[in-house]
Image (tube, rainbow, N blue to C red; front, side, top):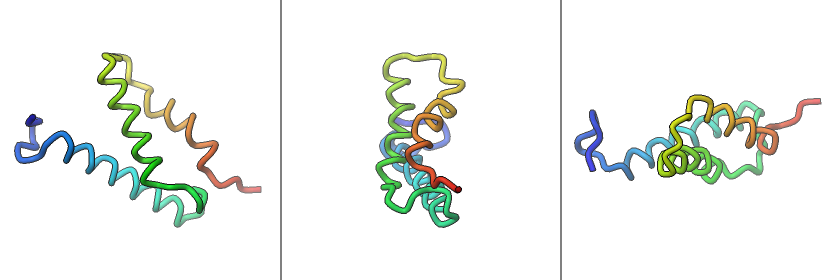
Length: 83
């Protein structure tokens, strides 16, 4: 399947790039001390991207606040608690 602007990329390539981007953000946050050291950033990034895939596949059209819902669900278990 070809997506506009990505004629030589498959959907799998695009998904992989998206997961890699989220993983890099999580790694940067870990380096800044905002994400716990023991978090598997690749798995967490895959979960984040998977929520969008699942919403799309089930025809969920109200995805406007999905990123905020995913972050609100995952962040408490991922963030470093500063006391």
